[in-house]
Amino acid sequence: MARLNQIGIALSSERDLDKLLSTILSEARKFTSAEAGTLYSVEGDKLRFLVTQNDALDQLDGRGAYPISTPGQSMPLSRESMAGYVALTGEVINLPDVYAIPPDRPYRFNSEYDRLDGYHSQSMLMVPMTEPDGTILGVLQLINALDGAGQVVPFESRWEGLVMSLASQAAVAIRNVRLTDELKAAYLDTVLRLSVAAEYKDHDTANHIRRMAQYSAVIAEELGLDAQQVETLRCAAPMHDVGKIGVPETILQKPGKLTEQEYDEMKRHTEMGASIFEGSDAPVLRMSGTIALTHHEKYDGTGYPRGLRGAEIPIEGQIAALADVFDALSTARCYKPAFPVEKCLEILRESAGSHFNPEVVEAFIRRLHDILAIRERYASAQALR
Ligand code: C2E
Ligand code: SIN
Ligand code: SIN
Ligand code: FE
Image (cartoon, rainbow, N blue to C red):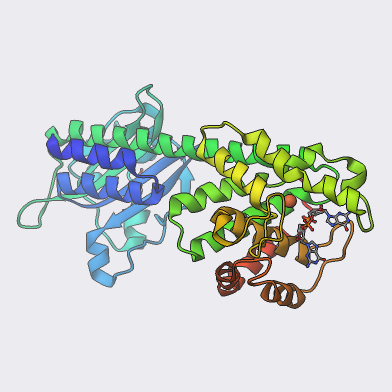
């Protein structure tokens, strides 16, 4: 029980779904001395293999991954398979020998997996991964319980309840990770749509925002910011220019050079952006405010709106500045053509110490490979999906 509680706490704090699932499966196997096991998730009318573990096959050839049951593969969700039966009915299957299933059962064992793996399945325990509301998210399968001498024995029925409660904790954890992912996706989608609305006059704004956020995250990672800060920055950076919602369209869209007066008006997008986020308690929105305010400051103090210098400029603003300018240089704007990457790099290098913090420029150049991959990925003018 104590061990189960410990596992529960570990599971509820795990954010990496793959790691989480592997832990659930290996803990269930440890409790029952199972040589092998698989986790399946229900996805529409399919059952997908999430994780497969098999000590015997690992020892044989160290492959660690098996032909059919490779993670990502799926099989139809049907009552005729054992896993499908458990997923559809919520019943537990506990068999001493899967090659001797009583004929009155609706399911049968698919020995194809054994044949392909060169493995012999005998005893098997399959339990549903059930959420508190009864929704079945998947199936936990344990194969070949071993006794002290390494002989295959049946799974003792007293383990069933324990394995089921582990599987249910897994279901809750999976749901939490999915909810977090959904929330994050919805948040980013909202941000993109609102930012496009703010700058709807600019062409290809959605991709500019995507690229700029990803560039910022890569630079931050290279500078050694912790994973949490990198994620916050990735979510915060897209809103750097929302203050442009207050800049007249005639200025935003002007094909040629801005007059001094027009440029002054454009500069106000920094403070207008900051005022949109003012007073928020959410870390992401606070950072958005900081970035909106400081992404046009320059390292030598000649930027706007405050003329901050060096370390007075928050690091997220310094990073966003470089990401923003690289994107402005490397793509076409209504007032300028796209420059070749070489020329962009030349401009960035020349601006190290004046416009940009030299360390930020160096981090950017060290990760150029990743930067260019992002540029490639979000190159075309694609609509929001
Ligand atoms: P943006 O187009 O996103 O440009 C962001 C920043 O990239 C600029 O900030 C500037 O630091 C850098 N940048 C852009 N083009 C070049 C370039 O050809 N050479 C160099 N060295 N740097 C470049 P900045 O200047 O404060 O401008 C802020 C925003 O004001 C721009 O955002 C754009 O929306 C607008 N803007 C700036 N200049 C003009 C212009 O001449 N005509 C028009 N229509 N808009 C302009
Ligand atoms: C099944 O019949 O549900 C799957 C059999 C297996 O994975 O070994
Ligand atoms: C599976 O079919 O789900 C895996 C069984 C094995 O590892 O052989
Ligand atoms: Fe800006």
